[in-house]
Length: 348
Image (cartoon, rainbow, N blue to C red; front, side, top):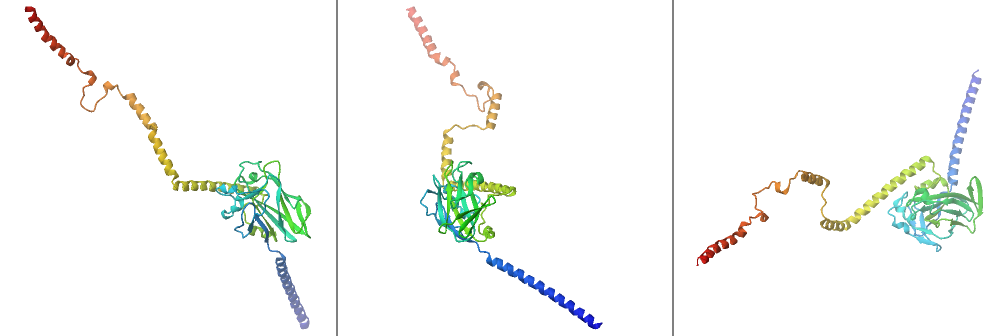
């Protein structure tokens, strides 16, 4: 009996040891799988970035945008007249103030980096029009894929606000794969380069402010590209948040205008205007206030005639009410002297 009990006890110990060993092996396998997965995930890197119509710039995320080498179309810095660009960090507003546009279709050739997952970030800002349906155009990737259709920047974010469009695609065995409405479209990558075209439509000229091509694990995109101007497919809550943000941007815009006017005032413009206003006020007749007018009307109603007014001092003779006897006195004297003379002559 003792031997049987001892054997059963040893079997139980062996089974528990085997279960612990299996559990330890599973844990090690999971850790190894996670390490292998993280090692196989390609880090996100910048393949190419360009500041259209402008000079080179490194943004707050460390992405270096090259100066625009294209000599097709028109490079414009019209956006520099705006006091601010909404929905973007102030130091990166420069990417949205310059642009390249053309009166017809134009585009850029830029390098790819072999097979992998890609994200193309395109930056736009409407700096001229102040209404929708004025500038509307398409964007074509690699001469085949319409990645943005009927883009109306103002309709998305209004005037003077940053708007980013992000397009995801893959390159597999030297061919670009782009998913559109559940179907995979493919095109050839020629000589390791891609093509980005801005298609002229029936309305105003197509344009681009800046763009960047990133490659690697797309889950890291939010860390590298933390712009507020992304994701055109927004749900209701996100749209409400964007509207609230736009309202705050408008308030900041008004505050900048106020600060700008204050700076102008400090330079002496307001002082000159005040002097001109003083001169004008001296030339114009003084207009009594409403209270003064009421008081004046009230006093006029109660005031008597000029002949019945109370005087503050002794009564003074009026020069127009003098007695006429002083004027006739010499005449009376002459007549009085002439009558006795006439009487004496009569006696003679």
